[in-house]
Length: 233
Image 1 (cartoon, rainbow, N blue to C red):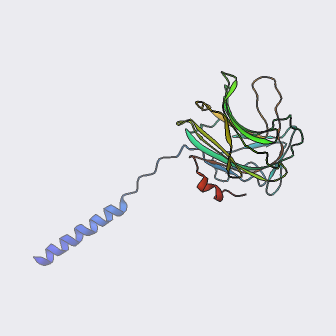
Image 2 (cartoon, rainbow, N blue to C red):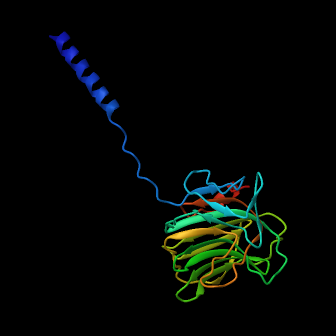
């Protein structure tokens, strides 16, 4: 009797183990956060496979992308639009041929079909980030570097956006920019990311960028200064 009972218990345990092994773990939900890395080492391809970019008149070396100041620009994605999350960050490196302080070349711009957007550009040898409201035709938030970095050298740019809490930050070489104007941030709708020129509404100058860009990264969260040392070329 004992032998039969032990046999039944062993069989039950074996059946239970098989059932546990056969249960597949639940698939994690697909992420909709913006998360991409463009190394600029030969083309405008996202190494994570998230987004696809296309470049016009951009000269790619094995390590960087050079913009000629008259016709070079990049589009991410090449076709279609991107949904910007409530919280995100981006970083890149730049070295500019900036010889005319009257120009305001765009390094990076996020813009929707209405003209609302976020711009990072050079103005009188300082770096700015702005949040543009096309309805009001003005910047509703603006940050600027307190000093003018040497444009002939490479510089690291990190920007963070939190539209839920109305927080926008800009860091150049890990140093924070100062606020010029603050207000309730306006998140762009379906967005294109543009490198190297400013896509104005209407017939206005494009403000093409003359210089190099490298290692463009997007993050699906607000990154902190503690993470900045890990952002390298």
